[in-house]
Image 1 (cartoon, rainbow, N blue to C red):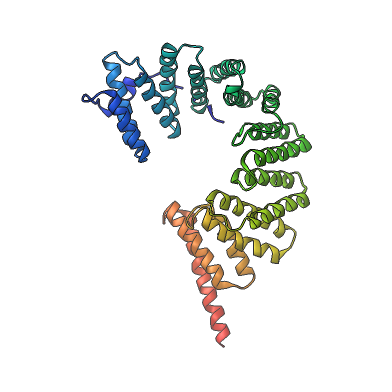
Image 2 (cartoon, rainbow, N blue to C red; image 1 turned 90 degrees about the horizontal axis):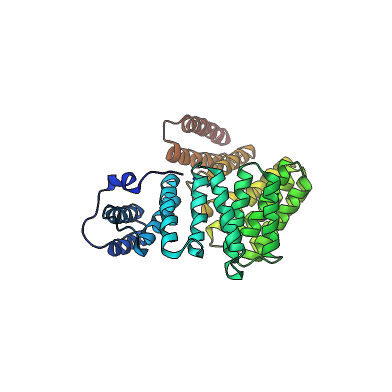
Length: 388
């Protein structure tokens, strides 16, 4: 998790956008919402900024409408990577919400979680971010069962900041508490237990506790299945991490079994139209291809890389950079097997992707073009030899 900070005045920060002088701020709030719904984020941001600036200039930025403007601004700025500006927005919102609803109101406490994340994400004061997270966790810990999600979110923030500060033992204790509070069966759609086990695995890996790392990864996969369902992309991703961890520990047999199990379940589910599932399908195929190649199972590896190529086109897109390593490996396998025409097609795909993403003058693009030219010549010679 990233956590962020800034202390500039909104009026100064956003003055470049100009001020709207006609119409009440409630209309601007609505117009900004419409722009956001249409994914015109620049228009939404400008509208909300100008509306707030207008109220701030008039010294009337003290009502619920202004709180809504700040909430929308903070969210959009955070989502678009402007974390330092988002910090300034949430700082103002925390003060305003406290004035409107009271410092001990749940809505005020929720803002602390938004604020601390942006503080951390912008490289701000982690001690302050940790204090905000602890305050929110303490509040929601006493707020009752209706606020269990907020409590878990706050505790996750506490653990994540501690981990960022390299305070691993303390972080482990927090993640253990999250699992205890959530119970053996996490709520549907809740990521907190999955995330906690994942963080505990990272801590175990740091201390060289391979068995614990694997155990936590397996528990994360089980929690993901219970929370999201067996056929959800997040569940498949968690299972892939289990296989990857096994492989990293030297248990290639166990890793291959997990990958094969994932593929079996994917195939039982049929041809999923979910792009995220297709992406995990691609990753599973490609990583199993690497293991089968290392084991010398060339026919199995060839089948896997061909399948990975097809699923990658569906999940990521034909010109996505994730296609590069798969296309390159498939080209090499084709050439090794004497399938020159197919190998050339794969290298042409690599060239197209690199031209699109790196430009025609990139060294990688030029190198691919050189290889492709040589392949064209090799294929020409091979075909000429066949005719003789």
